[in-house]
Image 1: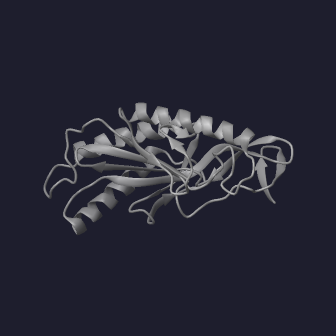
Image 2: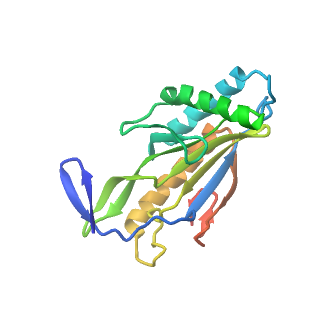
Length: 215
């Protein structure tokens, strides 16, 4: 049993949910076509492509804001560029990402904007009696990258809090239905933010997944 702190109260939580090494669910949203082709070749102007990336980044983080609070940014994955216990704003990470992309371009010979975004998810769990709103770190992660003439946004989760039945078999219908509904709304909002659509989805844990969440 663990405890989750929420304003004014401390709730004991039976932690039947868990994280897995493989994805419980992942969705890839593809943008409409960009005027640029990535990776950029050495000597090509990066100011316009950078503006385009950060426009998508801002729209994505706004669209995910009801469910996701940004706390750290990685590029490449595993290398933390910036981390904070308070909410990170898109403008705070711009310089760190530009420096990272320039350094990567020197090694690879091509300039390609990408980053992984992690933080807290505003979701629900069930204690002995109640459905409780909590903040869970890394219940959801986002990766926004340029690829060819488009941008790809991957939303992935490695925990089963979103399911109406945990992977281990226990019931989670009350909290899971709320979480799944919030996830579905977020995926649809991200499609609008990307001016695109979900092009692939799946689970490495054998969970049934649909275009906008879990079945």
